[in-house]
Amino acid sequence: MGRVAAIKMMVLPKINYLFSMIPTKPPQDWFRSLDSYMSKFLWKNKPPRISLKTLQKTKDKGGLELPNFQHYFLANRLQFISGWQKHTLLDEPWLDVEQALCNNLEISDLPFISSNIQRHECFKSINISSSLTAWWEFLKLTESSLIPCKRTPIWNNPDILQNNNMINFSDWSSKGIKYLEHILEGTEFISFDRLVTQYGINKKRFLEYQQIKSIIKKRFKPGQVELQTPPSVVQFLTLKTPKLLSKIYRMLSKTDESISLPIAKWEADLSVNFDQNFWSQICLKTFHLIRNPSLQLIQYKILHRVHYTGHRMFKMGFTSTNNCSHCQTNSPDNYIHALWFCPPVQKFWREICEDLSKCLKCNIPTSPLVCLLGSLDNVTTEKNIAHMVFTALCIAKKTVLMNWKNKNNLNSNQYRNYLLDYISLDTASATTSDQFLWAPLISSIT
Ligand SMILES: [Zn+2]
Image 1: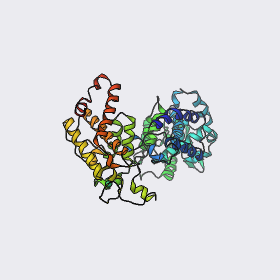
Image 2: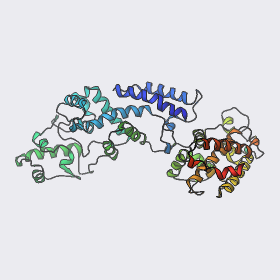
Image 3: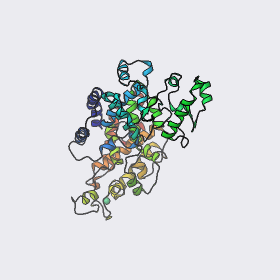
């Protein structure tokens, strides 16, 4: 976890500086080798036990928010797309230069034109082309399509052709009719009479109205679906400075909504079935209910089931028996057996739960859901108690892991010593209001 923070603080700013200065996208190999260095650093040159993709997820999705460099590259490029939309304010001098390259096109319209824009003069500008390429990648990630949408420009748009030429009726655009939303309402074309009264279009231009109608009808076939702007695009366009880069990055990391936890294995082992929200909360509790990073890491690793069990060693060919050697039950030494069902471990958990229930005057059931996953909703609603219970249970898990290879050595005295060590450290660094937090537990242990 400290190593993830080190990457965030030491590596990310340097890479981000490069991305902000160099508009071209580095080759995939470059990203791959960067990721492989990160992986080696995180796992100290040992084989990774949790994939980089999982670690890059947000904390509620089972990740550690490790930087995703590809997304940071995209976010850097997408900042320009956001800047183009503010062109009217003329607050950025570079916009003028880029607008000049677009000739008769408005720079703010570029994102709403299909990849046909590649044939346009402006695409020769490296900044415009790399930003648009990033934008198309963003649209792909968010599964949104903009062709057509409310904001599709009508004039000088290479997507809207008449006899292979773009159309541009300057009288219409000067009166404020620029996008499809100005001539279409729902699935219907707005009538010519209404355009005349609303925008002051000259009545003699009826023929042009018919022309536009037939071209648009032929190209986009409106009437079947109502024009929309995809929600992710609307959300993107509302993002504003300051911290625009991290806002865009956060939006990109939210595009993958799946939770990366071995949920199916947990549900099979515990014979339960929960919705995504439950698992998301379980992930978050690891970081909300506990402050100590090394205990957070223990809980995080347990949720991801990274520890090697006898069963796993057997499958890899390192041991000759699949069964647990610490007890006489002849059960396979799998994750849930090693962490919960093995008799010496069971006995340990029972003692811990009784002990904690007595000290904190609440009922902590000897259940893997509470002890292993840390689902405390049915135990207590009081934040301080939840914090104490969660911490104590994490220390109990630390004790189990310390005796992983010889479970018969497991005893609650060792747990109490770890707990006392932790409490003395915590109170030493705590604010005065937290000084007495641990009082009910200390009096019962000592
Ligand atoms: Zn056993």
